[in-house]
Image (tube, rainbow, N blue to C red; front, side, top):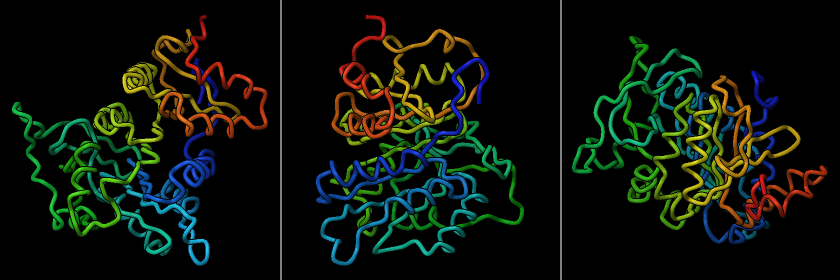
Length: 317
């Protein structure tokens, strides 16, 4: 969409997925560990369909050369979560070729219970904290047990489904730590790398990403993909990611546009317009980010800008 900003077309996970798969296979330890893909704001499964179609596991005689992966699709709306469950059942996704966990929870920078405004479509969002982190740093959600995991992994929409629901809400740091400690969940463990954290949280993306501060600080997340709706949100999110040495790009149909609150900022981004786009971020100077940039621009003159951008050189120098 375009309202005083870039004309972004409609570029999100779908055009990037084949590149991310190539990076996973070529650079991520040659299949020696599992890769995780978090789909936060899964809706009824559009991105899950892309993920499961592109990131299938190698089987048969090629099994020893493939990279294992687990997709974790997260959707807070009970009704839409049930639609996601129906898609998984219809597609027949499951081991050994594919592993997908589905969780009916909210995600934010606070652990607790949130009120979720649920219009019954992709416009649902977290609106209020019912209870969150207490002052002593403890949270009001009990440590996730296997019983709780099974509960939040099950379609439970009721006939008197309200427009406002109370949903258990986690941070990325807390969720990953919890899943690692549940021995029955064998498809997530402490050695796994997170290839992608994809966030589409209807304006709440900034807070979901801030809830991953420990994972980002430890460089356990290779790429972060998030939705942009407002310039203010874009500024805050990229500024936060920069503190953890993540470099961000707005995804244009023909190029990746570098974005940085100081080095790569553009005058029209100071306007308070509503607009829509997506951004992809990776660790500054990493082989994975460099490879993504080169593949995305392999048929474009923009490739000549690789060294300038990857060196972190200011656009104003």
